[in-house]
Image (cartoon, rainbow, N blue to C red; front, side):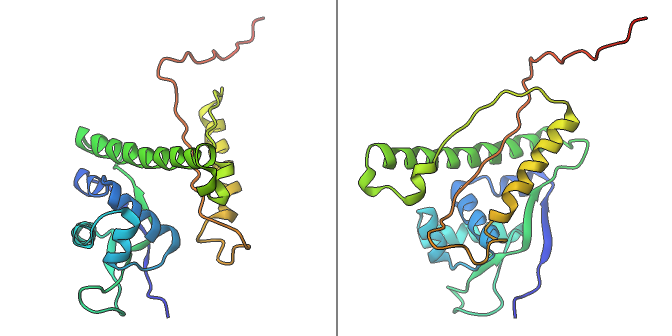
Length: 207
């Protein structure tokens, strides 16, 4: 029987947020939380492209902040599997923002996560264009889209929620029996306001 876990782990302070600001840690967190399966330090190291000893250090660091934990059963003391500590992981600084350190740590995680996605996109494009013989089936859909929108805060919120509802049926935790030929695909959605944009003035009625 699967072990009961909490619904959410929330990272609210600079130290816990900065704990995940490392490429190897982000890769393993993504896989553990995305699929809900267990990984040994050796398996995690293969995913992240590092050594088992280095990965053991990373996993213990994540354990200290309650992000991952050791599985209760299976494996010996050294290769006992690691699992996610909850169903979801969120960065949720207290409101109002508590400090510049929290903002800096959050920015470091975001920058690293976006950089990892960019590296995957570039590698996919390289395979599909320069080395089609090594291309993966999903490389043909690798793409980047950029759109400039005009929206109110309420409209932007509804738009983002609509996108999330649209992709939810394809998420790995929802699609437990994927069709033949299905593979992992990363979809990144970012809503970024222009800091120098001028808001459209609200029309006023004139008599």
